[in-house]
Image (cartoon, rainbow, N blue to C red; front, side):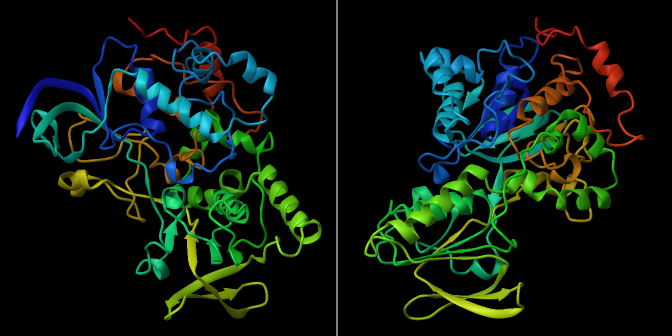
Length: 451
């Protein structure tokens, strides 16, 4: 194993949007050294779900940097200017940016940053008195004082489907990178969130051939919309995250369960598109060109079996308490994701604290609790749903969280992280000094900590 002479202040594992945001905020700082590693050859953001015409669910201003550094050259507006699109973009008056364009913006940023290294597969991370040692599959190793883990979450595969995964039973994360042949097939989509809705609509569009039948199954009692109203959006603010963090574990779990539709409902526009498509299908299309479909809400799939010809999905109808089954040739699981610790952390696995659900608890500044020295920190991205709330897996606060980590890493207020308090008074016992911090920081420059 050949060890490089460079000793980083921060090594990042994984280059997704969250670590990309952190890399962008660190790039102009001369008082630290950082490098982020990823096994992939280039940046790619959810290529398996890059469906045509799909749109973002958050404002383009909540990009990688703008909320904490609007002067950054890595903003979405900078991307538009660099590509000569600024005026055309304004005049088009898009209600939301198309996901493909935002993905291209992320790719563009990844190509500008000097502190990213692709085609670098971190095989193992260990720790000794010199710090963290990152070992790569190419026989090289790098030392770092601190770590940031941003490898993302793993597709959630229900227990009943785990032995059936293959070409005709796929998770939604692989939907667009799988060679589907849906002509004359019975297709079942499972999952009532945004991904399930988009795939249902895509299958009906005959992008992969005209299916014989399309069934959409959801545990939810109805096709429920994303709640993106003004006061629900207060969940996605620094003020709320701080208040949420100060609650006990059992209360935080209960709160998150009540907020599902704030982060995982279906965009109202998508529901309108589905409703309009089904109206045209049922009443305006020629009988030979319309589709047979079923939307089955309030169903919980309990078993999946295979016979010589097809899949059988066995469900419980929670509306009338009956048991049902459907047949399928192709099953697509839009069942979401779960937190996953990367295999490269195996040498350190026993050194982390664990909560009652075996998750690694995070401090307020996103440090994982471990038994190593406080001078060597391990930060984690997208691992704080239980500690920081419903905004943690979303893009909405990516820039703010990255700024919190930068300030913590350098023990200096490089970026502003205090903002105007919410109009909603969350708790008398929480964040009483936030308004004072906000007023004190009212003249703080976003770039105050740069050298």
